[in-house]
Length: 431
Ligand code: EPZ
Image 1 (cartoon, rainbow, N blue to C red):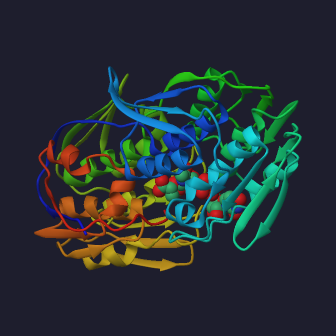
Image 2 (tube, rainbow, N blue to C red):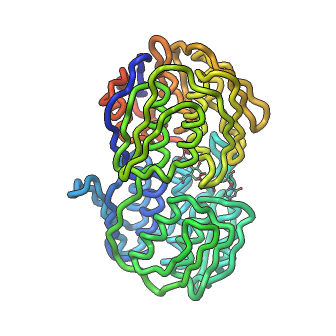
Image 3 (cartoon, protein in one colour):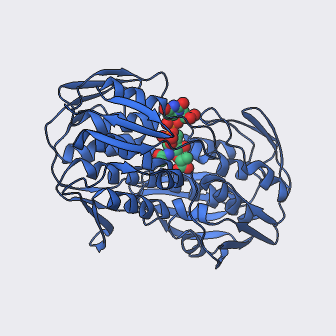
């Protein structure tokens, strides 16, 4: 199993180009099932998760071709025919987002059998809202032995759907299904993450009629067929935020390029409140910190444009060295503090009560062996390692490979003392 070793103390100076967004790319790949024509996705991140979904899509009938295009990595997905509407447990268990093939399969071929994804390390993560929206669109849903059997032999019908709270996955799923439904669909209280607008832009390029994505109300006018398109994946806001926090932790000056600072405005506000200097540019931002301790701040995770739950662990790593006590309230997932005991191994002083963590800043962290249970928790340990004295060894690196492209290379190019120690690669786990 690969491990990553970091020797703390090096300042970061340089430029980090940001990759395409993982959480957009995998939904866009699923959208390719909606047409028999090629969908060409540019600015594609090359990650374990995109490779993995490619494997599932091939099984369903897609041809998946990866290439280095003029604007970087791209993937062309062509599903002339759905050869199977079956997504087995083993494939869905390993990556929750695989579940999102259900809507497109149903919309295109009127039936699907997809495994329920089950829980994962960050929480129970039910899919009740996904299923309710498909039912509202006229699908018949039956659950047997861990599988969702979905049918809509006469096609899906537009509907008004009101989500009780903002769910990224359920909104995307309803959108992916409703584009081919007959008539109009309105999604109320929809998730407004930038990945939603990206998915809608791609679907519109394929011939769909979607408006309002990226706001709380999305209108979809169903069309009878979609065609091929070329679409550039938006920059990864979580990768952007992660490197911004890494630069703040290590000190120095790092310019993040090929990205959008407006996607992480809430994080930028918190960095500035803590004492970090941030300058925004047309193609990204520069993060600077020259010595001195940061100040503790309070963080409450919220749906976009609130503070992203996917950046909570990284910011907590930063606050372990801040002056004073910072408070983290996690409101999206019930079990997203698994990095806390690991940060404790590096000398952090953190206590957790329910959904709230209190971090009392310490003078220094010390390198140690650590292990993490999900993607964002793993990278928080890398960030902590950048500032810890001595060597930090991060185990179970395959979590990082699911969502961060060439992490050691990007940080190493800015002067971080970071290297990968090769080992056997186990299968991926659910996020
Ligand atoms: C997406 O997960 C992201 N994953 C997550 O990123 C991210 O943390 C999350 O959105 C919130 O921003 C992908 O895009 C692949 P939700 P998703 O539906 O869609 C509950 C990462 O590290 N819920 O917005 O699963 C759910 O349990 C990952 O890249 C229901 O109760 O998130 C959670 O508490 C981790 N019923 C809350 O809603 C449902 O039917 C928000 O989940 C659906 C969700």
